[in-house]
Length: 297
Ligand code: NAP
Image (cartoon, rainbow, N blue to C red; front, side, top):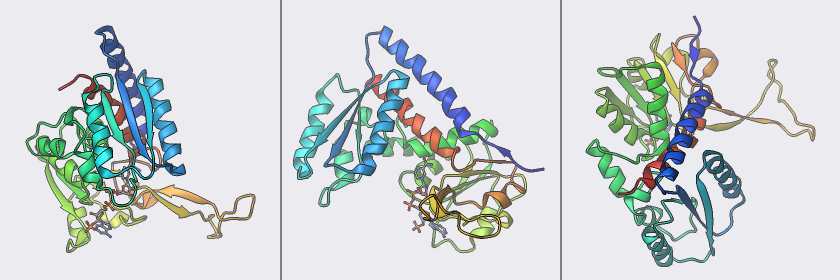
């Protein structure tokens, strides 16, 4: 029987409703949730993302303000600017838009955000809390993956969770979150010997490699839950293998994950689609973190 789809859209919409209710109840207590996004210099790609971030916040009742600093802002002045916002009780959450201009150490600047205002859960203090199992604010994609897993596996205790990818925003924090839930996580990466040996052991397989088609059906344990975090843009072909062209004769592109979805869905019990799986849940996790930030230290 083909796998059931885990709809990120459905989960995201439930979380958004919960966020709205929390924003409203904080308002009743006189607290406004206010997310300040900082952008250094102009970047057309970031602007699209920032517009959608602002719209989402607005829909959830969260105030969103964009502060654009000049492209030649130094690391020192950026840190000073953030420190000013840290002291501003009206700015309850801060998000730093990437990329930053060359020469600015993103990790250092990120860590100058007050831990309780760090809505991306990316600064050193929040990462450290993860190790102690006390994270209030954790990286959105890792927390989104946990939500998606929990939606199909109510008790992950004792489960073998294999995570493909060891980045600071997905693989590593997710492994720590899984340990807190008493699962047995394994992280794989490019130097892992015999990847299939590990993936085929997974009750829950999370793939965050950024490599389209990396995970094939025969690498998945029958009945496993598969969470595909990957987002890749690839050329589109029709069933005969011919390129699909747009009106201007240019080959169309489409978004796929890291898992060969058609093959994997014949083996897995549950699987996230791409798009429509991890992506929408990650987005609303930012809203949830913004609410958590507004609750203060
Ligand atoms: P990243 O920093 O590039 O990390 C990729 C990880 O995958 C690395 O640890 C790498 O191993 C491992 N890897 C790559 N190819 C591999 C292979 N052939 N075999 C085994 N391991 C392999 O990427 P990321 O930022 O974590 O993102 C991963 C993917 O998730 C990307 O497609 C990204 O666009 C997507 N993403 C999606 C969301 C969402 O909301 N859905 C959010 C964030 C990211 P090494 O460490 O050895 O190099």
